[in-house]
Length: 360
Image (cartoon, rainbow, N blue to C red):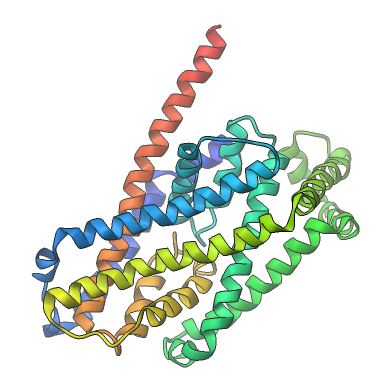
């Protein structure tokens, strides 16, 4: 991912667009609650519940940071935990502001290359983590789907997207895994990619080479990637199994944030809640399966609406509306604000370091 591409993704236009869609949907959800809505609950909720939700989010990010560190160590690469934490915070930031929540992994590769890691190694680390994440997502989806698929289908359009999402996630997982470990299929893929002339020209521009050199360059890069994926597996399958376990743990902690806020508001308002943590976790897991196929930045709008419609029968409408609003403010809008600040500081520091090297 080139630096100009990173800065373009972090443009103010993308950020405003992401926040605007989410805010509009949240306001619509609050309006749907009608007379049941008690806005004073925002102020009545004790502040320790907000701090608790933020702490849970920090724990979730810490788990993701640990995943990155463990995979890097498989290559003998060591970084400080603070760097891995910042890298994962900015991954979430770029996911939040890019369509289809697709900007996080490319940013991580870009960021690792800026730390001196060659692009092939960085891609192998991030793609292997992405593969393990998808295995965790599919495992959880298989667990939750039988119980919640009926309520999922009640949301217009979303139910079909869920099954399409599951299918495409599975297909992508099989494709990435196969390409990661099969040189023969990699060669066939390269041949397909370079066959159209316009694609050869595009790859030539991207790889900074002549069109006739594209196939050789791509094969070299893919073979290196294939080698590093084999290297991770030879280093020990336990790296993969631990990563899947940590991915499931991350999901559980992150999805617990919404339930934590629901319980806090229930205790504050005195209104009972029949939904269990497994209910709230399961609904979120299925919605996040669809998130990567929603064209809005960070799947804004779809997640808020889906949570409201799927949980409104188990949680009082006003409580779920306020809970979703707070949850989105803390794990989406707040991350965009903090991420923008962290990214700006990071770019300024790198600019100064680059200038200092040139001067010397």
